[in-house]
Length: 63
Image (cartoon, rainbow, N blue to C red):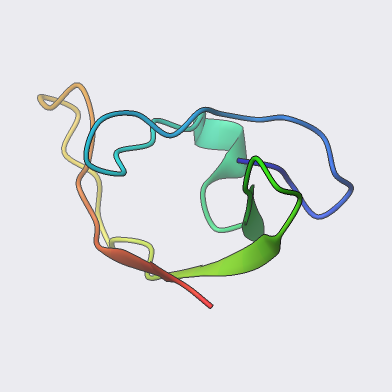
């Protein structure tokens, strides 16, 4: 995972799971593959966050 400036911000694991920091939530995210292809991640930010959960789960599509 990279931000809109090309900085590494996360790694895709397992079945495409990604954990990003709170600072990245809502910002443009991109995936850069091993061969250099880049796609933009389309996702929706939850309206509310539950502080009792360690993380939130959202579906995303890379276009």
